[in-house]
Amino acid sequence: MPSATGGIRNITMTRPRTGKLPLLQIGRLTDATEDRLHQEYSVTALWEQADQEKFLAREGKRFRALVTAGGVKVPSSLIAVLPALQVISTRGVGIDHIDCEAARSRGIAVSNTPGVLTDCVADLAFGALIATARQLATADRFVRGGTWLNMRYPLATRVSRKRLGIVGLGRIGQAVCKRAGGFDMEVRYHSRSERSDSSEEYCPSLLDLAAWADFLVICVPGGKETRHLVSEAVLNALGPQGYLINVARGSVVDEDALISLLINGQIAGAALDVYEREPNVPTELLELENVLLLPHIASSTKETFADMETLLMDNLHSFFAHGQLLTPVIKD
Ligand code: NAP
Ligand code: 8YV
Image (tube, rainbow, N blue to C red; front, side, top):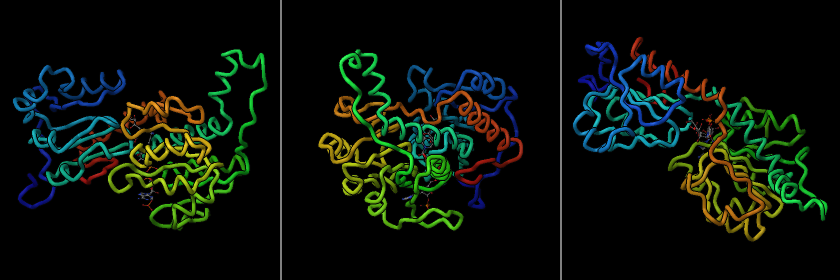
């Protein structure tokens, strides 16, 4: 419960007898970071408990910190059985897997890892755009399958000097825009508000942006506010010469509509790193040649995971040593 002052309750700086703060881990981190976590905290891995519900009912009251990673949910039901929880630290910038309202109502601080993954995600987004337009995955299979012995590979689609529409000109969207400059692409963007610090043309209407763009790159957060933001109407506006690249969240795109339009050639192709029910990918998508399918890897490099996890650990240290997070989603 919030403190008597109604704000974040006083952060208990006292450490248990063991000297290490009890921390519940529900999302896997790299081995190096998990080693560090065990050195600095009294870590319990929830996935190692035979009966997680019984374990939490019995032991949940011990934990002061919770560590997770993108996609490993922190629902209100979990927060409710952790009465001593003070901080949730997640690897990744997206926070749609955390019930932030439940955390906020309990005065629990929440940190993510923005910025350190931006370039990696933008690299992947642009790589996927090129791979899809130039059909790199299909062409690779064409060679490996021996088909080249009998025919030329069909003509693909040029990227340079084409029109790039960015949905969400935030950290990642701006990094994608920067990469587009290297390919002499014309860029326009759509967000809820125009950016005063951007020279790119703002499109108040997502429909208009989709109708204008050759490539539409999705870089907005997930969650209920952006669910199916890229609707059937937006996909129809993108049109039979248009390509969709989604590195945001699967929930942002109407996946059933996307599949139908891809099958019927009403959009030219797509590159997807995220899906509505990942890791389950609809069979129809698996069977399509005009789609590049990636397993949510936009930030998945050794360097970026190390950077994100360093920031995750530094957030925890800063919270318990100085009473504040470095990159708060919910202020402590
Ligand atoms: P960010 O800096 O907060 O940028 C988000 C952008 O989306 C902002 O420009 C915001 O502008 C815009 N936006 C938010 N709600 C919108 C709406 N309803 N309609 C239109 N635009 C909207 O975040 P980021 O660091 O770029 O990360 C963006 C997202 O990428 C993350 O939240 C995550 O879901 C996803 N991501 C995916 C991967 C992956 O592995 N595939 C990796 C990292 C991140 P306004 O506020 O002006 O609307
Ligand atoms: C994952 C992502 O979180 O940061 C995000 O929002 O989607 C990805 O970076 C990644 O798997 C790290 O947990």
